Amino acid sequence: RRLSSLSGNVLMLSKLENQETILDKTVYRLDEQIRKCILMLENKWSAKNIEFDMELPRQTYDGSASLLEQVWINLIDNAIKHSPEGSSIHIAICEISGMITVSISDDGDGMTEEVQKHIFEKFYQGDKSHKAEGNGLGLALVKRIIDLCKGDITVESAPGKGSMFIISLPQHTHPT
Image (cartoon, rainbow, N blue to C red; front, side):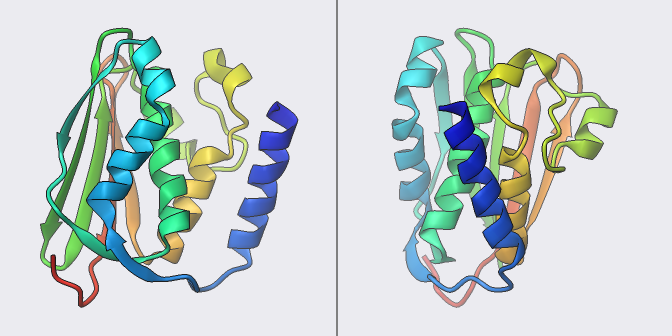
């Protein structure tokens, strides 16, 4: 299972690194997509008794639904993985001056500045305790997808303070 996941991620990352533009763009509801991704991960968050605090107003987006689904699943799965039992994860969407911003924050372990510098690098795993659960490619994939979308991803974190990933995507000519 882990080898299959690794090879799948390596192949996808290799394909995305050689891709310059997104070809399968459609207008879809970003808020609905994020809700769907949370539901897809229900077995993981319900096992840890994690609650979701969501601010997901109706938001359309013109982009690749399949690629952005990878982003949300990866970031939400990481938030669940690093969250303590019985905590909550906050997810919000807002639109500010032509940019759609999605923030995903948890009350987990947090990261040192040193770890934050490297988390988007291939095969980097800052938290050695979760080594058995991943292959260090998830955030590299996320970063490449956001780059292809002409967006930006940043992280705010500190040890013991949890982490917040902030994704900014340019909004095209499709108002909500």
